[in-house]
Image 1 (cartoon, rainbow, N blue to C red):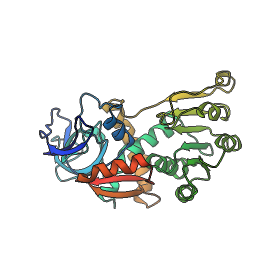
Image 2: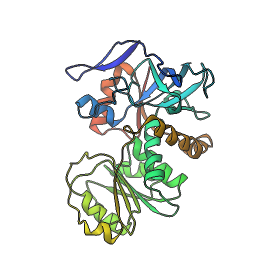
Image 3: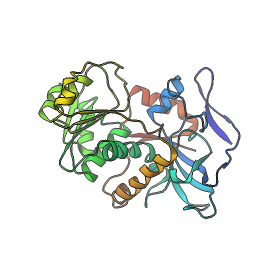
Image 4: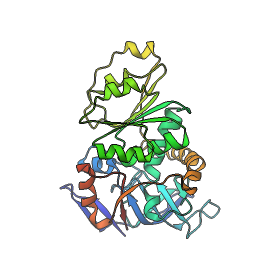
Length: 319
């Protein structure tokens, strides 16, 4: 089969690689029809985010496709249309994945739509529901509302968990877009004062893939028992925080990743995702927002779009 391999020059090359093999009685082999781009793929290409050792070395954290091989008494059978959460290897014609990390396509979804679901919606669900323990009527803040993860977080926080939503965005246009998705308040990072916005709208739960110097001041705006969840540090690795606030307000600052969790943990997250979010997908309440669909051979352009910050929503590649 063919896959997108990162060569020594950090170029993305569509080349022959060995076919994947089911090594476990619970493995499923998929013929990939579409895969989606995530920032972790860009980080892996840059050499700053290595894949787990049990997964292929080429990128790809989520895909949709057709089952080729499946356990005899499993939940899926050859020919079933599924989407899957991966530890890597989605930029390929085929991938092998534990059965528990596969989900049926939501009714009415195309492969392109479904490819944009597993990673971002699992990350959103994990951190809103399981880590952040968000409750109806609370206020939620997402730093970076216009990306694939941001949109998923806004949709789930607003339409599944019943929260008020604050979103940090990169432009007024993106702010209007996020409001159309479900955000109640938006903050333009280039024009507005984020600390002032959060002081006026104290977040009970925050998901932050940005970090940087402003993070400590933002955490200080949280009310009693606030939960600040750090996913990455795109704006820098250091901040200053008055630690007295942690015990005075009973605040929690939590580091969280999805990729490093075990397949068993991921399967449990996906079970909750199908139970709580699939009905909203299938009723038309909301859907993944796909910014652009490109053939897999144009993966370099997909990466360029993400690095340049041009996309609102997911970038999907067809195989």
